Length: 392
Image (cartoon, rainbow, N blue to C red):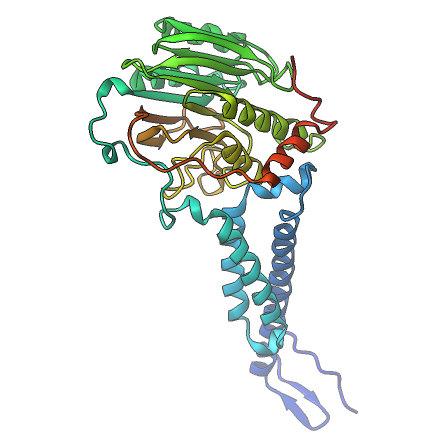
């Protein structure tokens, strides 16, 4: 009587008068394991292609907009999984693996297209100080911006950072009353200060030693998420406008309507200003998102990271998974001397430092063009019922 085939315990099996060597059994078991790996890779590939497709949808829903953030990580995962699928033996996957590899290749191409400008392989957008001869030291100034992370109580590291960098202009976000007290010893040295201390993670403190003609804390959309507006001058006397932002992020239960409206409104205000403009802060949005790119075009901004790198800042504790949430945008009259992401000081964000120069007479790249579609997008974004409209 024939026995059923069972490749267990490495024994030689019989079926009728035929025997199945243990080596053949091991091969079949190995093939089964490869099939399991293949199915797992296929599921991951489907998920990665799916979330890439979600990021193409024009929606303010948080669960869609969140996929704007990890484009670099998704791209790397796609490459790794595509290579793994290509390694899978044909017997385990038949020809279906190439369907997944092809889908991954298309999705990866889109992800690369979105992030390529923020790599050294793209052309730069902001000229270096050295490209504009004749700029004097009094036309340049240093900056520091940092989301301190309200729950972080390691005040000493932030104080030490401010003392070491000694910036001419500093923006600190998520500052509550405890942070305000801790920062007083270093910020008291600045002659011009603006702050709105809050315990809701949206407090802010701004300080500068540059001449300040006027300055105010303003609620663009929501009075609980303040912004900074100031009219400053370099030591050479060249005037410019400063905007410091910290809108709300997309999280479960909180879509991006208010964030996008705040960013769009700030862009429209910048466009109406007659002086050069510099904007920075924690935008809770990545540089390559539609909202950030719209902010650039409407406000007439350039991004010094383009052609140089992503400069990721969040989350500070996970180097391979960081996103560029902390931004610096400048109009074409500015040049950049240096831009750097500094070491962790205990916050979930990394500090950003820069030295920029204002040289209105120096030739450089012009502001990005604005299309009618851009104007319509801004109008729709600001008028969104969920955004709540601009505060008076």
